[in-house]
Length: 234
Image (cartoon, rainbow, N blue to C red; front, side):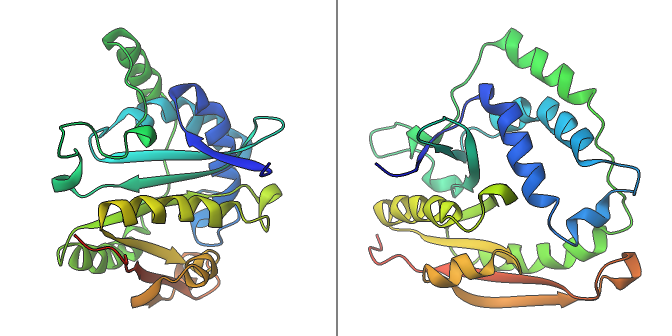
């Protein structure tokens, strides 16, 4: 039996996903610059957990979510979020595409409650760094305008679980779905995660290297735009 399994997410996973995701991004030398020195990781985990159910339920037509769980304990050890192209969200039979990775919906009252909690959560990153991501967004949008892709929008493995192949397994799961749908995959990778994609056959199609030293960074903020070419095109 594999040490972990790739399974769907539900709103009940909010706390575990928040801890996994914030732990992963806390290691990113540029992402950490978004927060003032007085903001602690545990505080961000708490606030992220408040926002997570709403985020899991938004854009259900196009967003797909997966978690990696420890097969013995059931603990969340990784997470991936995918975006389907708007023209490929349903099957020929009218069912949601990749339905097993679509977060189950909840009732109106529960959704309203999640919205209330999320809207009262604290989430105030510094706003003077937006120019860095604006340049990346321009390149991303240009690539995605060329043809439909499945986009790997978010990949996070907690530092305690890195180096075990969890991120690779999450990406492989998306590759399997892309092959079924006959679509290529696009992702915007950063330095720490770039190796996973290269090992799985992604090719770099563009890059943007910027100087983040003015914001307290190490001086090089690299974004690598990568594509996996499906072998079964439709």
